[in-house]
Length: 298
Image (cartoon, rainbow, N blue to C red; front, top):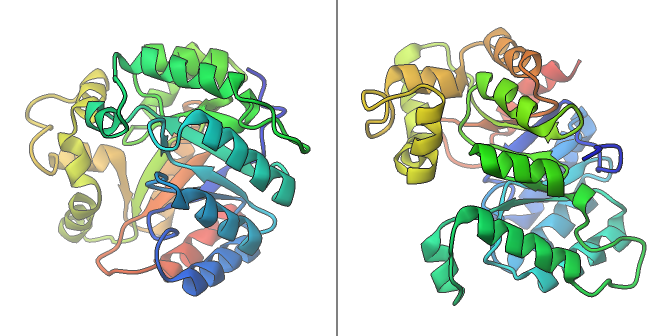
């Protein structure tokens, strides 16, 4: 799949749970500041439910030079016809600046939507078929076309599917080394845009504590455990919260130069874009940390 028709992401982006929430004015101001600082990709985490389109609309308005991406949207909510129509509406309003990151979630999510899960590959193929078969809305776009979607792929078969039916992949909780394997599966043109958790803390104990609070729960999820085993981690690493070795491999912590080095490792291994997920010891929007990280855009 050629990436020439995909909305531009740039080399770095911001991935944030905090860019969704009740404080719309605060989120608007934060997105505008990120746009002004030079960030060209804003990733919405937890992109499920009917509110995602409103949230994406707000970010696209607040950050007029940025692409907004879902990281990732469950294929069980909304259904493909709704997704195609809403994506088209926002494209007509803001131009081609929205990428739908798609994930299979799990059997419980399928059941709650009244659908059969089957296998991850069959579920994703079915959803992509429904997207491609959705009635074409009137306007300048084509719903959620191949260039407007990425897959939250981890396993080799899902990565290969992304190479055939999407612009690329947005994997979560991975190491830089995974990019080289995925590049072989995707070929030279598919986008690789991994999630990278970041902690701006140089004390190892504090940094790992923040990291575990931020992403530790995901290490217990079967799909992530399976992929982490593919990446060389074992039972001693896949303990609640993750071993120090696992945390250090999947979370970039330390000084700004330490973060820069980890990003470089992703690029050197074949990534096109890195989505930075700031983890902190405090609640709320990490605006100070985002501002500090903007020095990496130079």
